[in-house]
Length: 525
Image (cartoon, rainbow, N blue to C red; front, side, top):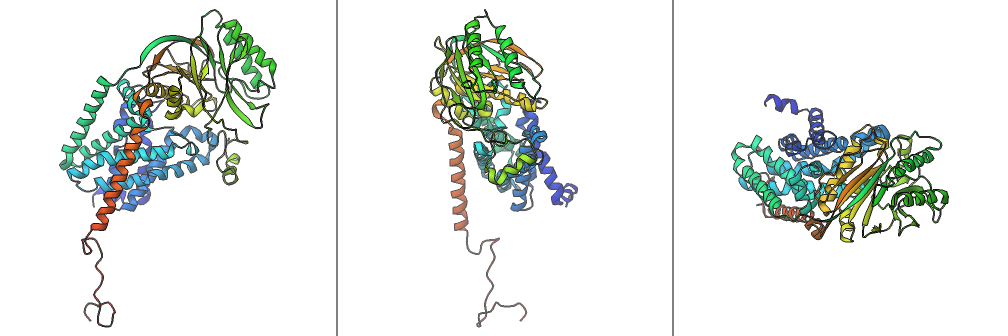
């Protein structure tokens, strides 16, 4: 046994190394934003699982790597959820255990060209299956999907318009698998290189021939970011006063829409008609509708809601939007009867927020139709796609990440706007209370400067408005369906291989011979 082999023989050392290997892709996400690192970040994890001595150990390598990945992309939760962050990472990390087994199944030893070719399809498909499961809102949603690390890469954003963030994740895993083969299996380099060349060719073809959103007009959209307001008694009133002062600065600037962040109004406007009148007066003064977000117990029905409300010079405009997908533990506790103890070890929700029932497209006047989303709803590709199909000209996400102000979370959240814009072919405004606020155009490109976490400002953006729908909006999550078909084909192939294995094939135990009395024969007797 070689020195590395002896060192890895310890299950604990191997597990720690798997956790570290799984955490490496975090460097590709904001704030570091080393997007190129995503092309090789999975290689150490793949090499470790490939060299697992048994299938069971490969399962553990997958689980430990998944634990490291989830913990890394959610590390900013630690000051708030404390030890429960590790519980979440351990539960979600288990989703990668079968992926670790798949890595060993296809890449162990000296795999044939056929196995390498299959690995270039099955391993990315397995990764997408994991992302699909953990994208369920009850498991935390699609935060930290591998493809989201490419938010600032123009060719990748073009691919997102074809197959969404799912296609980016698939291709990134494919590249990592090919690189791992190039590093570890000299005899199988030809199919690995072929896979890389095919990926580059497909990406280049998509860059050349995929349709581009056609810009029809522009809208002047203002973001009002009040900045940090001290917590405590009267904080909601102080925040509203600051938002009011900042909004008044927009008078005379020919603005088409003004957007405030999530929880920008801390009282239900039915209970506080004075606040409703002040917002209406601001709309008259600026000659622009104002989209606010109310976080309060509603006066017309029981429970606390987070609602996007549009106000014009004459008062409320159209239907309000109630947030549909809530943040687990932050806004509600799943299975509260079992997990309610989380409130005693961190800042979990003391009372569950209520959910909305449908998405809403609002008419902001002058032909501008906006599709609001709230907070981490901007992480869900299907929600922005749904709004684009329903006729929204502009996507708007209202967010508040002040709880995680000094972490990587604000930048990571803002970067999602680039993906949603590119996928849908619609510009997207990401407006927050305390930063990072951002605007991205219909190809995912950045419009103007971000408003950082140290700013209290009102800023106007010239936002391009595009027409038509992207292939991703038209055809939906086709990379996911393709991945599931690949996995189904693999499962059928494995089942067929097992059932057709000869009874006395190598590796299958041979039943002992029996004597005339029916007892197993014993050597030497």
